[in-house]
Image 1 (cartoon, chains in turn red, purple):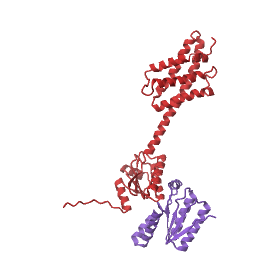
Image 2 (cartoon, one colour; image 1 turned 120 degrees about the vertical axis):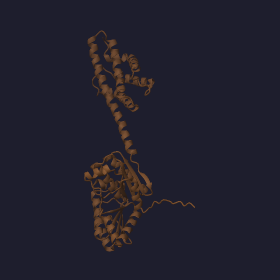
Image 3 (cartoon, chains in turn purple, orange; image 1 turned 180 degrees about the horizontal axis):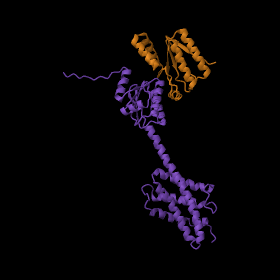
Image 4 (cartoon, chains in turn yellow, purple; image 1 turned 90 degrees about the vertical axis):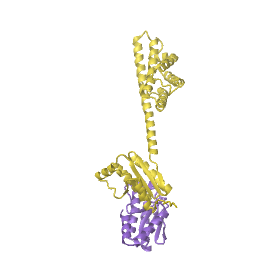
Length: 286
Length: 136
């Protein structure tokens, strides 16, 4: 036997690709809805090219070496696109593992007469492909985490609208739990809006806040104080009976803050402060 | 050396801070302003900090001090035009500036000062409400 495994695999590149494609297309988990067979072929070809091309006899186990960085890059790119396209981890895993099977099958066909060598080389290929799958998974999960982070940002962005309910009165309904990061966004949005509209009253509606603990209360007090520093008054509305109970039990002092049970009564208070009056028009029938 | 001008307008004093305050300047302003309040027996002090983009705890304390000192000399202090970032910083520093009145802009600040001076000249009840505003 004169050829080394790497040379052998390079020679058999076409066979590997064909076998791999056959494996992939035969797999039940093939997602033709997410990726077309043609694209899949292009992806696979690129990966096999790069993998086999960079294979030398002594770099099988050392994944940190520079020769592997293009392969890892391609694999990472595929994993991230797959994460964004909504492939499941199993499908992404099957993509890499079916390549391993193709490689092993080709190897088996070539060195059938030397079981000892076959075993050794198979072990090497196994180790290499396992390492590559780990890299794929890592990148895949990173890609998924990026998606989650982006969604979190989006939720934080859209969940704090500042509404102008009247000339000079702003309302800010808070929905969901208030943590420090969110308070910061709420506060910045509110203060910015106060400056832009020149409003003198802000209503913070917390009917959508599921629970108030001492930390949330502290965040609320901070927001109210910051609004006061800007020269506007801040009213907290939408306090449910359970929340009132918790606040008192926790010993939080809200006596310096105007609190109302509903947004309507807060608005009424705001009208009173601004010396506005809402009247019912009496239509005279004559 | 820089000096922050203190302008007199009727019974009020106007201070517009156009530069970022450093400690020495702030201390001088405090001293000058108290002197001015005494000399002109002003009823109100209006401090415009709309151009101030950086504050530290020292600045926060100086503003608080000015307000307390003016109060002793029978003048109300209104701080106007605070930037959102400045407000957030002061709150994070734990300086809610209690005892200082605030307004969104010069015009609203002036109206607030006028209404405070008016009510303190009125009868007992109004006096009480004006007092409540301050101790809040």
